[in-house]
Image (cartoon, rainbow, N blue to C red; front, top):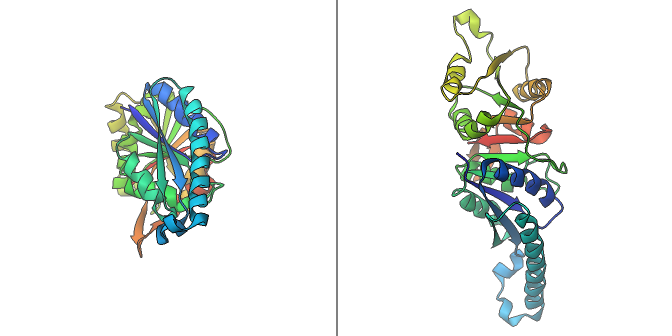
Length: 275
């Protein structure tokens, strides 16, 4: 059930992309829409006492005025999607943006942002942090493509892993509204049939118990899992891709798995991920 959707806003042109999708998604599920306006405070202010510096006081005033003007515009845009909307402004230092967004997203059913490695603002680490630290499903959108949410065909990239299971569970409300659900499974170590297995049977049964019919497609002959999944999703003419967000912490930074990064670099449709 989706009742609360959080969307990342920055006061930039990219907000139109995120609001168009998140707003129509909120209408589809009759959900509350929560805009998270990020106002980045210059790092220099955190290292200096601004009270004794006319320059820093002017810098703060200028930034506040810009943020206030952006907030006024964003409230008007949010209001177009009905009465159940709100705008929260997050005044944060550059290195804290991802953590602040993740904290806000935890009390929402879904987070909407621009996909990393394609965001014009170059904020890949911000969106990665939300994916890995929010504990919520995240939908990442292709940049500069203003479009409403469409759920005719949903492509689920499945593997028997916790991340994929969490993504599938988070996507259930969307799959229930889809006209077609296709499960794509990349055979990374040879065809399962040679071992007497039926890959995809369990996930297909799981979805059927939720009243969701699905088609299982086995994908083999590829060396690159990410490229294989993206190719199959294009063949299916998918409107949305669902997959686990794979990665791990390295020296306090997040490192994405190969397939995850490939889709976040090249996907031409929204991608729902969970970690």
